[in-house]
Image (cartoon, rainbow, N blue to C red; front, side, top):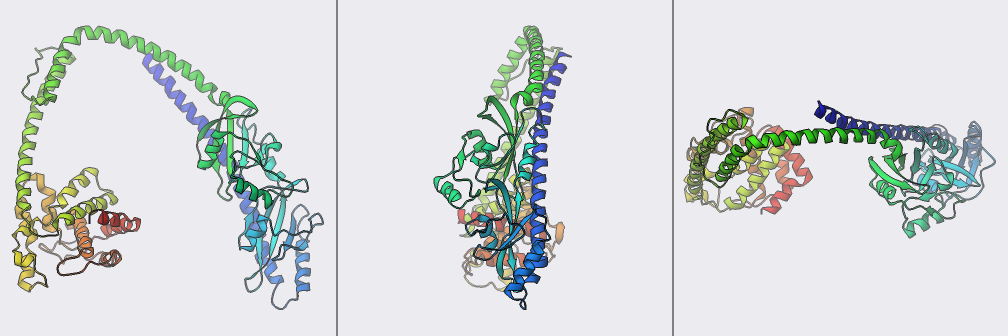
Length: 560
């Protein structure tokens, strides 16, 4: 019962921590989605106006005066809160729907540069004439799709700032919501606007100078400030969601934060809460868990001491036997003297295990001896390409099997087994095996017998079961036109289908006495072209993925 209470306390602690983390992440995700939606909406609105009205206003039959007049009438339909103005390709204002837009040149501003390059752009919040603004810009095109200007919509940054500020108490007293751009500069802050346009990360002097020179944050921001908190800087640099712990300048208490990247703009949202609020319930459960675990520990110690008195001697005998077996003495008997308690049963089981290990060791030893004899016969092969060729086949086959998602135990057996795929060639006469030119029909028929020879060499040993099926059927075609048994489709074992492709690819890209080496791409095209005829389509698809990732080329280069 006490153990159950301890486990329950620790389980509840993990559950509460997971819930708190999920709550922090969900709140950050909610605000991120709202900001992303607003960004998409504003971009769509300005793009829609340009594509629907301005191109029509600048057709080939219209004079420049009429174009300007039409643009001005169009802009008058917008509300005054949506300040709209159109710039020419030099950055000068052509028309505007309000009188509070400064009639100056905007060619140095980022929203102008992006639009002139053909992009619809959303600026960072900027301070101009003592007010915070966000600029949405898009290119204006004529009937030829040429960029003839830039349409800009200016919105108050207050909308974004208030959204962030309203989140400060959503997760409890002391929680903060902060929005930064890709440089780590705060562009919205839940509690203190004086911290806006100050960077969490110490900017490179060159970047800092460019941002200030180009009025990246508006003409009122003469210098970008800096507040150094390394933990926050590291979280922003990773640009990935996750819990991190950090201090604040205004408080000595630790805060737990979550960094959430936005999708529509290269911004990051930081949601942080005081550790006291985040961990209060968890600490209470931790104290309970420690106390209940301590009680369990004391009970276990008492019981263990009592058991050790009665079990020490048989356990010592069991230990001695285990050490002897570990050192290779499989004949060491385990004395259990018909003991009735659990250790007696364990010792009897241990004795049964010893006999089984002894028998298994003998069987394994016999199998190894048999394997060595077979490999000795296989080593008589005279094909000069065998060494590196079989190594490449080994790694090609294992890579294909892994890409197909086959079992790990099968993959480990497939590699060594594939090495013996051409073991039957030891029965092929030298004048055929090493012939420089093309085979005669008789020589070709003799060469096609090597899968049968390989099957005969490998015999009926279970140890070589996989190698035997590869050796016999690695020249069978998926459409049934192969040899020696004209198997078709999935009647061909998957091991042979894999080695069929691996062997063909290596033969194509390797130089032989009778041919030059093909390029990797030529061999790839040949294999893909014969998917479903010579090769299993599923194996071909796995090969294509490996080839495109460069894995095939890496194996070839490593073992050439």
